[in-house]
Figure (tube, rainbow, N blue to C red):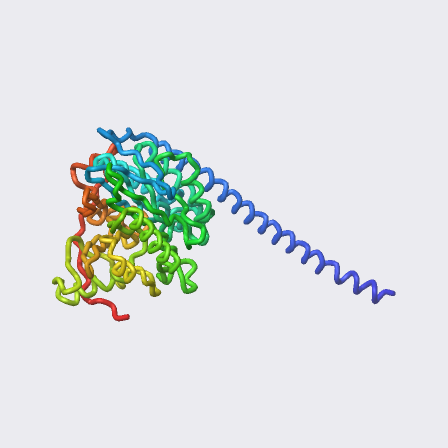
Length: 427
């Protein structure tokens, strides 16, 4: 009896010790949980306040003053159509990169101001954004939520009263973002933004935002087709985009481009000129620039330099990593005279390659690249004039020209010199 009693007595302190440690661990875990909840609540409040301020700013600009603004109407295929006998002005913007989080509200404000200044000065008939309106990358933006940037940009364009549409970029809907491409498409198509011409596109074609906008004259003849394509995001297991493995245009998109083009040409009674817009550049951008550089920055049989430069390092052109037949189909069909993309923020060159004009739009980005908000040589827009005969005039424009008078103070930047990479990577 006494031995058993002694054993019990000896075990009691150990039990108490374990119980005491358990309570301490529990208190620590509860403390950590409370801290996480507090941080989440504070971040949510700060993000709400910051986005409300930028939304207020987006809605504060005066409307663009037009002498006679063109109003698009839908054709028999449900595609928006501009009717004019004059030159149609298209403004290409790209990589606006509104983060929508507590780490970047000031930079978001700069981007909103820049877009408003350029759109107001140019008075375009149509704005086409070639991807990355949003940039919800948490360690730079401070949020995973990609809806506030979309709303702020759409509200800005609605306030300005300018017709616009977009192609999705890889950052608009990241894998970890709160909202999918489908959800953001529904936002743009909701009817809350009457000047937004975005349509999600046919359900049997990969991606969202595959759409056509047409231009015709008063006699009813088509003078131009604008094709907008979803160039998707990442591929090859690179779900977060950290290995720069970007996707390509898919085959059923190319088939859709071919089939719809042939339908329009048949209805038009002959050939129709066209242009393509998407975010991630084709491999032909890389092929053309490499050939130009390897020839001592001189024209070749295939490449005719027009303007701009490549300021990106390493790969220089961050195109899709796979193969697609879009450029070959463009050459075969003979309709598309120009292709416009974004994605590589320091690249703004335009070249003619094998008879097709390949152009990078100037980026707006203040956020994605380290220190880019302090630099200005790359920031601006691309102005495209579509003439009555279907030909195009294409010009790059710097945001820091005097003609772009911003409603709010324009930031001071360094107009950095761009060093052209001549030691190209071997692949």
